[in-house]
Image (cartoon, rainbow, N blue to C red):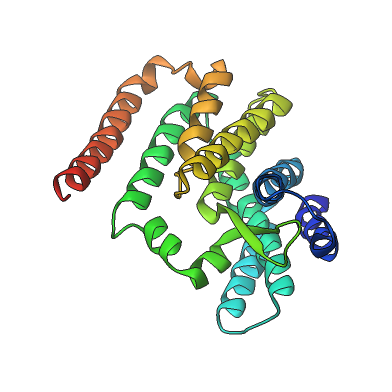
Length: 258
């Protein structure tokens, strides 16, 4: 349970100090991303070390979803909303993502999972009908479905990771725990992938499908995730082909519509 409180506590403390600390815009944005993305990933990794029973999974997931739903119909202060959203999203990643990850039968199932998740994230962001695209265009949806962190030197808050990112990372950490994968390395790779997404987003000033660099980092850094069993090769191959074909089709439609 310590992991659930880590992000809100650090965010609350930073919110108190943020207006009094004067830093460059670049440094302030970098720290905001680190707090909004890297801190929840660490908190999720810490929480995933505790295995949940089925009843506890349902209770925690239900409370997190109910919190987000209640926030959608109320108007708390920015600070209160930030703290509740951050805690709820980490809780969802732990309760749903990590519980699902612990039920994955083999570490190599992360290969199709990473590719399919990355492709789905790209399609969801690039397609006008995609959920991620819709969330990115709506300030209210973004405020409820992404982690936030204060920007030093201002009273502003900056978004970082979305709920889908945390659910997938929870799955990865769950797989790592149950299959004996090097946990610290898994966490480091997830942090590296998220950092890469943040750097690209800052450089290009556009929303970036974070699961693409995160999935790539996981697959490159964890050989166990790439050792597909002979019995799984056909299913893995076709899942990769279909997911990649969908991304290519979306990119082609986007290019031709210009």
